[in-house]
Length: 266
Image (cartoon, rainbow, N blue to C red; front, side, top):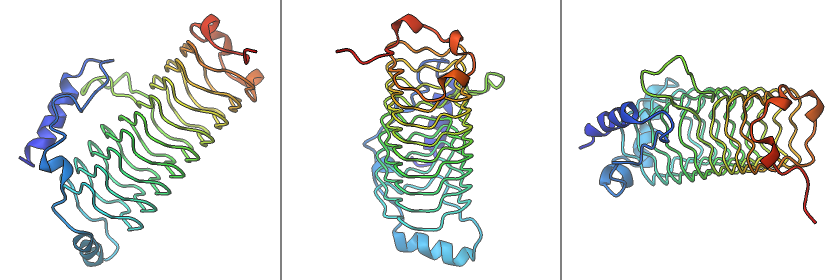
């Protein structure tokens, strides 16, 4: 059964229509042991780390759901297609790790380091990434409902690659994500999905938002200096008390501007 999981993921990715949510939950048995159980203990993982003597460990395709891996050094670890739903990775170091097609549904990654991590096809719905550092990471996956409040996403590479259609038009899905006070300076979120995201007081300096969907998002108090708003859908988005608006790029090229909320109603 475990060997079938990556094949299932690949087939779902290939079959998904461009805007049909790249929803990897469709057809997946979320109640199976592969998704809800752990085949290793924390002690087993610690033993692998010790044996590796500073080299990245291989946990690819492992069932690690619910496991306490908090504070561990998992730099560069291979966790491709691993299942870590509801796992505790609070304060863990996953810098440079391969998290492609991995599952982190409702996982706790608060304060974790994910600098430069590869996340193509990741599913991290409702995960807690508050205060985490995702700088220079590649989160081309599903973070719907995640908590990223106070997170660092500097130079994040989440823009959809329209030139690469081998696995469909994958993009960063930040629908209903809490990004209050997050630092997104220089991030690429082109063509990303940010509907109903909470970007209150977030720093969007020089962020590429071109072609993204900000419908219903809350940008109250956000800094948008140098941010690219070309073809950004702002339907019902709250664009109130923005900082640096005068220097935002292609501000006049937003979509559905007349339906945005630009002042607080009395």
